[in-house]
Amino acid sequence: MSVPVFLRHAFADHEREEAVVKESALDWTIVESPHLKDGPRTGTYRHGSPSTDTGIQGKISRADVADFMLKQLTGDTYLHWTPGVSD
Image (spheres, rainbow, N blue to C red):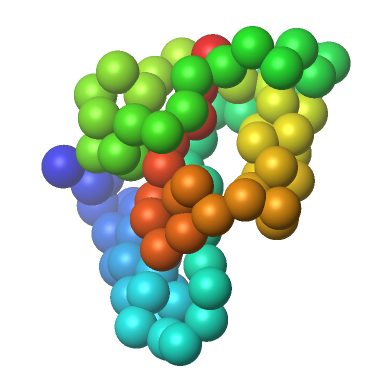
C-alpha cells in the first residue's frame, strides 16, 4: 500500500499501535472501515473481510460501525482478528 508522504508518520504510528494490541494478552478486535459518513444505523453492511480486502471501499455510517462494534462485545466471531466493515 502506498502511503502519501504527509501521512507516513501517522501510518507508522498506527501500525505500531496495532502491533502492541495484537501482541498483548488482551481479548481484542480491531475494526477497519472505509470513509465514515453521518447517517442512521441501517444494520445492512458487509463485515468479516480482512482489512486488506480491496472490496472494502466506499463509505459507511458511523452508526453502522458502532452497531458492528457493539455486537462484538457479546460475541467472539472476530476475536483476535481485524475485520473490515463497509456498506
